Image (cartoon, rainbow, N blue to C red; front, side, top):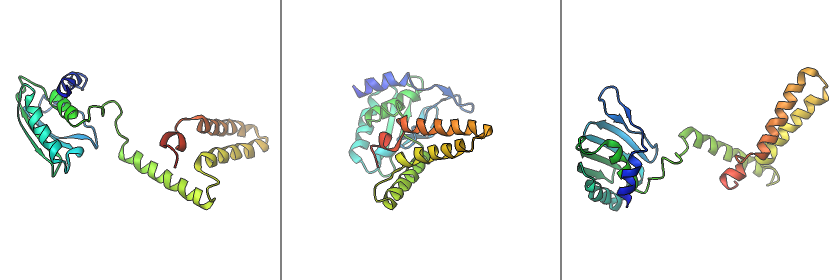
Length: 194
C-alpha cells in the first residue's frame, strides 16, 4: 500500500531538470528527507528519522527494491543515509524519493513543510520573551495582551496630539492592534499557549 502511494505521489513531485546532468532535480524536504547527491541512476538521501533506527533502515533496504527498476539500496542508520541505485529507463528519481517517503511514514511532508530554521529561532525568541514578561508580571501579562495594548496606547497618544499628519499612523497602529487580536497567529492560538 505504501509503495502504491509512493508511485502515485511521484507524479505530484516536481520535475525540474538540472542543467548540468539533465536529471530532474528532486525537492528537498529539509529536516525530513534531503537530497545530498544525485546522478542519473544514483541518488543519496539523508533521512533524519532513520538516524539510529536500524529497523526502519532495514525496512527501506528490503522494501524499496520491490519497485521495478530499483537495483540496489544501502541504508546506513548511523548517518541516516540512503543510497539508491536505479535503472533510469525503468524508474525515475521522483518515484524512488516517493517510495522512501512512504516507507518512512514521511509521505505527508509535501503537504505542510516544516518551518525553517530562522522561523524556529524566532518562535523560540518570542516564547522566551513571553515567559520573561509573564515572570516579571507574575503571570498577569503575556504578549497576547501586551502587544495590542502597546499599539493601541501609541495610537491613542498620537490621536491626542490632534495633528493631521498623525492620522495615518493612528489608523495603522489601530489596524495592527486589531489584526493581532483577531488573528489565529497569536501565541496562544497558534502554539497551544505558552
